[in-house]
Length: 260
Image 1 (spheres, one colour):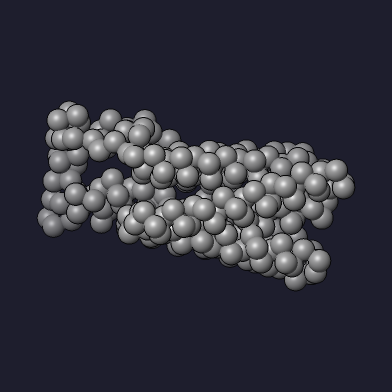
Image 2: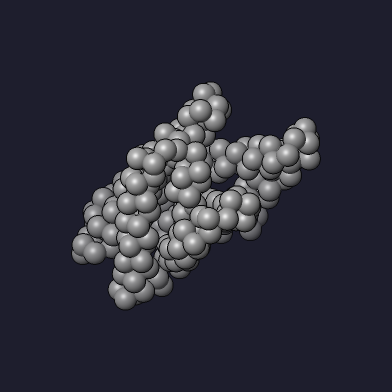
């Protein structure tokens, strides 16, 4: 996501560029603070993938800013950065569920296997689109990326929505940091999915406005993450989760399925 600002700067006017630069500097600062908070508070041990995600975007935001005057290098770097950032975001979703299932080994193993297969399917899907698309300069790479990104965003939004719907069964409370990580990523992933859909409908003419919307959503997610990490979280007790027995049943059912 760090590269969206430089990409937007190439297609909008001077007035909007000033807004983009302001948001760009703000996000770099917020990302830096987020990385420091994760490390200083020790939350990186609980969220190692999320920590890598934050540091990655912090470094690439600075790098893309330095490359803004070199259009060709910037363009190729942009797509590489977006691709890695996209899959790191999917990794953060996996990490959220892994934290929720920390006490249920077999459920955690099942969730891990599902994520591995999903990643494999996405890679194959992107490769097929890349190969089958007409050989117009640059277009087939963009087409492959957009197809894969749409698939990733649908998975992210779907998993996070399921997480919120079953938050009671998972023992998840809105004041827990894992809830905040999921909420922030959910906001950003939803806007990204809407942006991809609208771009397909309206074409490149909508790109400037959509890029600005993406940037605002990312900055909002950063504020959500910082808020949850800086405010003491509530620890859910066993007695506060009446559905805990249901998770135990699921874990036992998965265990029997694996070892039968």
